[in-house]
Length: 313
Image (cartoon, rainbow, N blue to C red):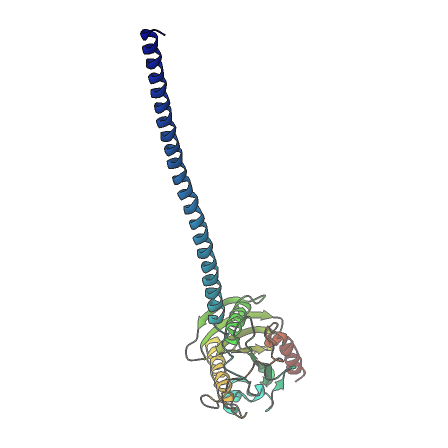
């Protein structure tokens, strides 16, 4: 073999060796790059796994905190306030003899007690007076005192129920069918709140002057209905004087309710005054009484009877 041929072979072998070395170096670099690319992926996966675990723990803690807060909220719910007054005085004994003489001078000494299934929750009494003046006619007066007591239940306190009933009583008085010249005004010094409603009512027997005083003291509502009329030619009574008498009766009735529950003076009541101590709500007390007991007693009906009696004379 010639020397030239040998040199060419040597060159080719050298070139081949160089290519092999370059290929080896390139493969190593590629493997390093691939390995470097794998590391961030592993780190990202590890981070996601860590966040997922932390979130689950936070959710669990939030649920625990929420449950604890709800439990605390439930335990902190306020209880409904117990009713302040536990009884009512005898309805026919709430007014003094002097007051009755002023309002119904010719009425029997004992009033007519209204029907009630539970006198500790609802009671009423009425009086009718006819003062016959012969040929000049007669002066008619009619008085009714209604007492309604409310007990606390799971939904609302006795005082809240009494406030609602008080409002309905006032609204009912001002919306009486046939009422003329109706007016209403607040009355101070009679329980926790009181309103006087007055109006004129024309009947076949004569012109009636009607006064209704509605008052609330704690969980008890007192309604005083008082009217007067001049019959068979007698003059119509003075409305302002009748209003003063009705308001006086309301004040005494409220004082009797307070006294029956161990507060204030006795007013006209002869009922004993038990001490005011908290107790469990009475199951027999009516939480939502129907229309006012006084509404069932018709002044016009009483007037008709009285007018007939006056004509016979």
